Length: 165
Image (cartoon, helix red, strand yellow):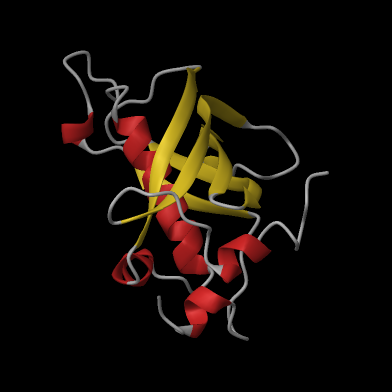
């Protein structure tokens, strides 16, 4: 283990409860029908989790250097509508629970609706977005041998700042 402040809850690090990233659909992510292949949504969700950590000052690469890894235990995805090549999407990743060796996230991938050259952004109060995919995941903390390990203190503290009791 390490005493790196970014993994032990140093003064300049705080765990976000929600984070969003922009995703532009690339050609190689589509299938023969020109739609995003269903396997790509798992990659988008992973990007969302890694960027959520990064926004809090936590490097997943540094976490792995301590011998700990965050692995997918379970994933649930609901497909609402297809996304296509060159679509601009926004992925919202939300931390729902963080305790022991487990982190639970929820995901919402949306496309903004554009009218009369005026784009209406997701997360505004007007619901002018098209939901593409929603999902949930359970992430487990393991060591290099695959044994379950408790989350580092900073990740454990994530639920303290906003517990869903």
